[in-house]
Each structure stands twice: as structure tokens, then as C-alpha cells.
Length: 186
Image 1 (cartoon, one colour):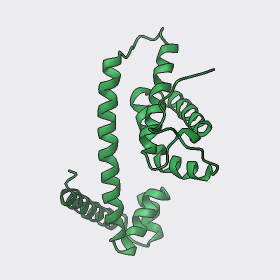
Image 2 (cartoon, one colour):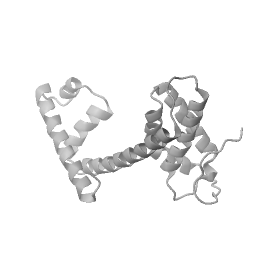
Image 3 (cartoon, helix red, strand yellow):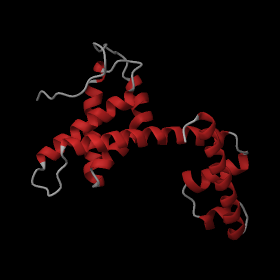
């Protein structure tokens, strides 16, 4: 099967070390998957498309030119996979015309770029936060502890923990907004 997919700019260079692929893919995986979800609302289908996209990118990584935008390359590959899926499922009621796909694609790119600036700002704000507040956020959101379990773990009343978390959220929001304004990204 000889499919045509976008290649990175340039002649493409051979890469012997696929460890670079893993690093680049992991740092762009969420962006590519978010793009897919914008066109394919069924999570199972979206996950299948993500697998197909990742597999194609892995097999063709030697076509990727180091230093170019890996995420944009992945989004383009995903876009072709999405179009291929829509062509296969022509019996479905919902059809995407080329103009609509281009419009959604442009909006998705803007949204994804904006999100990456916000994530970068959030990371900066988190790194400047005191250890106790970072730990509370980590336990709540990374470990998935309920407020009740977290309050019990840190030996505080639930009501007091809610107030503390609200204060932390407010502080983070203010910090992120300030960083975005300072960098001209809001």
C-alpha cells in the first residue's frame, strides 16, 4: 500500500537513532490526539487513529527533518488519516467537505498553539510555587485523591482544604494570566 502523506520540508535525512522519535512523540502526543478528537468524537475511533498515526510516523521517521516542527508533522499525518477514515465511512450521515476540514484544521492549530503557551506559563507558575502548595496540587490532580482523602492525608478539615485549594487556583490563574500578558500571548 503506497499512501501519500506529508513529509517534513527538505530531502529528509536518515536517522539511525529512534530514541529521538520517542522523545519527540511523547512531547507532542497530546497535541496530535487533541487534533484527532476535534474531528473524531468517538474516543475509541480516535484512539485507533492515534495508533495508526503513531505507527506511520514511527515507520517513516527517517523522512522527518530534525529541527522542524514535529508536532505539525504529526498533525498533518493525523489529518490524512482522518480524511481516509471519512472516505471509508461515506455511509455516515455527517460529511466533512474540504473547506470545512481546512477551517477546523486552522482553528485547531490556533487552539493547540494557544494551549501550549498556557501550559508553558502554568509550568513556570508551578515552579515558583511553594513546596506545600505544589504537593497539594500533585496529590489532588496527579494522584487523583478526592478532597476528603486529601484532607484526611494532610490532617486538615475538608472545608479548610477547599478554601486552600481555591486560593491556590486563584493564585495560579493570576500568575498564568500575568505571564501570558508579559509574553504577549493572551
